[in-house]
Image 1 (tube, rainbow, N blue to C red):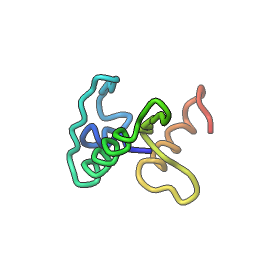
Image 2 (image 1 turned 180 degrees about the vertical axis):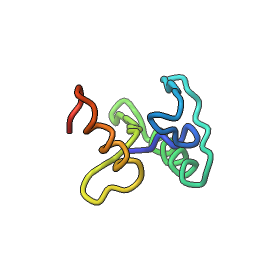
Image 3 (image 1 turned 120 degrees about the vertical axis):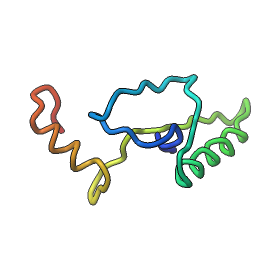
Image 4 (image 1 turned 180 degrees about the horizontal axis):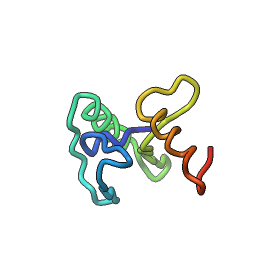
Length: 85
């Protein structure tokens, strides 16, 4: 499990659009992002025909006691008629 921060500073859902694809190059902007990118690279070194690797980079992890952008996103979705938690 990694983080979207490997692609640079976090971009909120309303702060401009940025498309990340399979060819987007990582550009960690801080220590946390760099540590995630280094971990990704080390895990990928373990891949072989007998051991497959999949790196997930979710934009947000949430649950009880979530911090960060989750509360803002949660307030937004309550006003959206097409998406509900």
